Amino acid sequence: MIGLIKNEWLKLVKQWGTRVMIALLVLITCLFAGLMKYEESHQADSPTPGWQEKLQAENAAYKKELTEEQNLTEVRKDYLEGQININEYRLQHNLPVDTDMDMQSFVEGSSDLLSFAGLFVLIAAAGIVANEHTWGTIKLLLTRPVSRVKILFSKYATVILFGLFLLAVAFTLSSLLGLVLFGASGSSIHLAYENGQVVEQSMIFHLLKVYVFKFVDVLMFATLAFMVSAVFRSSSLAIGLSSFLLFIGPTVTMLLSMRYEWTKYLLFANTDLLQFEEGRTLVSGMTMEFSLVVLAVYYAVFQILAFIVFSKRDVAA
Amino acid sequence: MTALVELWNVSKVIKGRKIIDSLSFTVKQGEVFGFLGPNGAGKTTTIRMIVGLMKLSEGDILINGHPIRTGFEKAVSQVGAIVENPEMYKFLTGFENLQQYARMQSKITKEKIEEVIKLVGLEDRIHEKVKTYSLGMRQRLGIAQALLHDPKVLILDEPTNGLDPAGIKDIRRHIRDLAEKKGMAIIVSSHLLSEMEMMCDRIGILQKGRLTHIQAVHESSDRAVDRYAIEVNYPEAAVKKVISSFSYVQPKIAGSCLMVEAEKERLPEVISLLVSSHIKVYEVKKVTKSLEERFLEITERQEVMSG
Ligand SMILES: Nc1ncnc2c1ncn2[C@@H]1O[C@H](COP(=O)(O)OP(=O)(O)O)[C@@H](O)[C@H]1O
Ligand SMILES: [Mg+2]
Image (cartoon, rainbow over all chains, first blue to last red; front, side):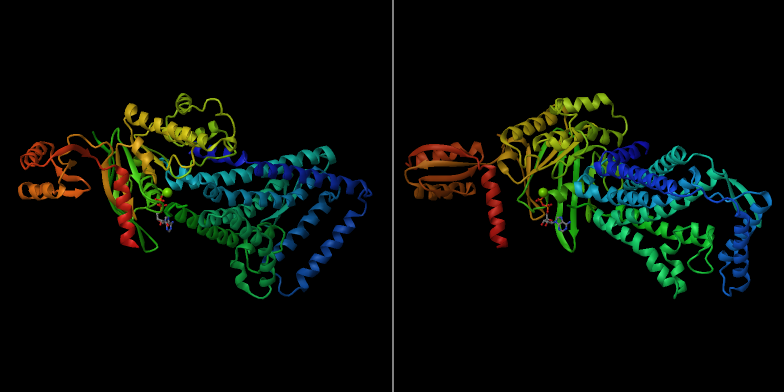
């Protein structure tokens, strides 16, 4: 099995397309860092004095929303309560909000660049089965004494590895750039509200969580592309269909969610797990557990389809 | 000699059309079996079923006794194949391609990889990317790949397609060597008879998915009945005489010749009959119908029947 995954990994990274993608990710992260540095240099030092008043004003607004807004979602309510408590905690312990750009906030900000990593993983997933058909090499791959299930599994594992690799590249690179360009001066404590209590978390833990949650998104779309690739044997269809859904899906779901409650069962309503952290769920009544179950069901359907079709089908042409 | 490849009533139906219709044949150890048929006859489809790329609709295929249906991994580990073109990863070197296949099966050492490279004579270019290879070189890399795991059975689908005469000669030499020295059972397909005659021990003719004929290439001398052309001065009289005494030799007239089909031992009797009937015998020739004639005869007959 290790040998099979090694094979797939080598085939993936020896294609120039893959190398271009890795180079692009590095380039984009560097560009983003440059842009941030430029903006920072044009910004006056943040006015730390008066932060207490600001937080108090914020809390007043939150409290107003809590009491006056009629149909608040559970998640929004939790979020507001959490924010109020965190702000009070800051006031009590004299922990000002750090608005300066530093390493941590840069790493958090550049987690948005993971959309690119996501797109690249999707492209890799779309090609990994379909290309073998296009190249004709599928004939040699499937006439070895290895079951088709193992072949497909090694391919999927390679897609995941590639995703983790891009994630690691993005995380390490933005940490390094953040450290060099903005310094590690910022607060290394992240405040979170858990079970009715404000807890101090290490910043690293918080950042990793943000990256992992975004990776779930990447994983789902990569799995979708992988399934289309295995079932339809066409990488362009797989790239086209899944990137179309990736870009259009969330917007359409958002629009639909205003009218219909069933949109909460759509894949796109659930791929963004940060929505629960940030108190902005698409449809009221959704919870983290609900989303995880929906995602698991979609995931299973994609995998079952891919594996059944791939292991049963005749290889002609 | 043991049969290494056995097909039992193998059929394949695709979209309601019977592409392969109850094929049965066996290939023995050390034998080169030619699979001859015009384009579209079903050669590639049959080969795809033997190597497990396509499922069988009916029948079974055994490789060294292992059924492909239920023992795919055991069966296919004894088979090396090139199906249609020798497709390789073009962005990898020849060596990296072989490493890919080496990792897919157990116990293939670096020495073994080097051995097959040497066998097909690719030492000089093996570390170059496959996209720089000529078709002949890719064909040789394909054979190296097929031999990597010391299979007992080798299957080559139209291996000479697109090769120049030197390349064809090269492939032919390899095929004969592998059968004779390593005792492999080899299946080679082609739509050209002339090529098959030079490298095969037996040829099966495939026509619209049916095996219409199987025949050894070199007519064995102990064959029971042969055809003879006897040149005489009065063929008509000769036919009448022979019919009255030995009708079973099926005498016919062909120009100035009397054609008979008889065992060798019968021939003197026929000749002495002619001589005693005062018919002059100028020449007696054994006529072996070439495979070419047979192939054409069969194909034409089929075409007439279908057209
Ligand atoms: N996947 C397929 N779907 C439909 N028909 C096919 C398929 N594969 C092969 N055929 C048909 O089966 C017949 C035999 O094809 P093939 O085995 O490639 O012949 P050969 O290799 O002898 O030239 C042809 O008529 C071809 O059109
Ligand atoms: Mg063919």
